[in-house]
Length: 264
Length: 279
Image (tube, rainbow over all chains, first blue to last red; front, side, top):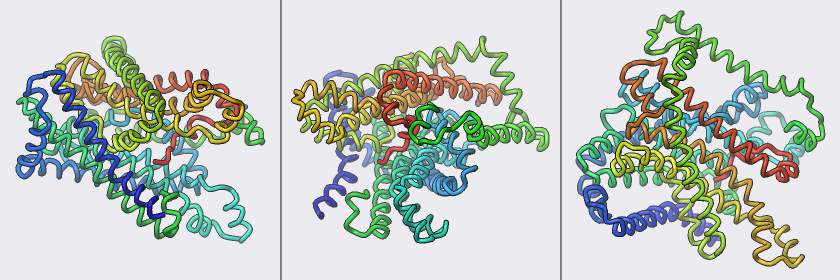
């Protein structure tokens, strides 16, 4: 039991860190073999030193801007996506009006709308928040909707036989069953929110990680670019951890301790 | 499609029922278009901010052969080459990993962890390494679709149903037969989910690569339209990129449907039902 929990925790925390380490090692190996010049392909220790030394002045302020955009976007998408996903289950006409578009959205490069939003709202925070939100909105919506429909019909039959009303069925059975799915969508959204904020900054921004990367590239400060990539990776990993932690707490409240390992 | 789902649910859904089903979605689309058309004259919003829908469509049609199609062709090349490289390598590596279960178990958390990382951040790097050519966009497209392909291949190859495994074992199937006759076919639906995911991602990758690194594709056109306030052209370009992604998605779905007849017959579900994956 506790072993399962430990394994679960390790997977959530360790996986991304391990992935990052493996990528760094692979990069370092490739760098040595390819023999590219240092100003194009900086070595890993240099990057890590830069990530620490330049943190105060350049990297952290820029990272904070991007992180804010990503978090606001994620919150916005979660609020709308969860609500709509739940309501779509309860209102069939809404479901039929909205869900086809949610499915189609998976076949569309939603990021392409970024230039339009920049054109409308200028170099402010708002378009980046909207792009971040738009990018993670559909996975959150689709997962929530799938979660609301995930229930086996026995449970619904039971509730029906107990003469439970619509709201009771929703809050006592459907919603609790949907929670793991809702969080799965949200966890997917963490990366997408960071990507959305960053790419929107590339299209048009004065501050944030996006402009920092482009400016540094222009003067061949590749160590800064690599450090920025490290920051961005940590950013989405950290968001992922936070969401996973919240998920564990919520699931513990809903299901109790014992089913944690299966529910998560 | 309709036959399969009705065969499973047991209640026949005739054509009229399907039209009724589609009505709310079509209605919502028409309403949105009408609202857009009416919004412009009523509010008097400047056309460089929001051109009316019909002028975007007009732009998309009149400039198609001069501007949009040549640009789309450049982007499509980047997308296709990138997709084939990235998705191919992803599937190949997934298959290679699955040959040795210990290696696979060791690598799984790494692969899962990579999903928590923003792959698109590498775009500027590829641009500085390979200049304003086709290569960096191809590489971005390949890079972003590599991981979904790999993750789905690995997932598909690991979750062969136990009952079928036992059946194969009891019939005396060797390891090779087990692999080619059971595990690989059972993994195909998952691999196709990954491929459909990947093909859309590779369009995004190519476009973002163009945003960062210039070139002549549809992505570059969007940025140029923003800087010159040509909103009609921008919106038409977004439309073209969406059309490209949808066509490629449908193409992969068609290949999926052709090669997985057995799967859709036995399950009676649409592939769309698999879209939501519990993470």
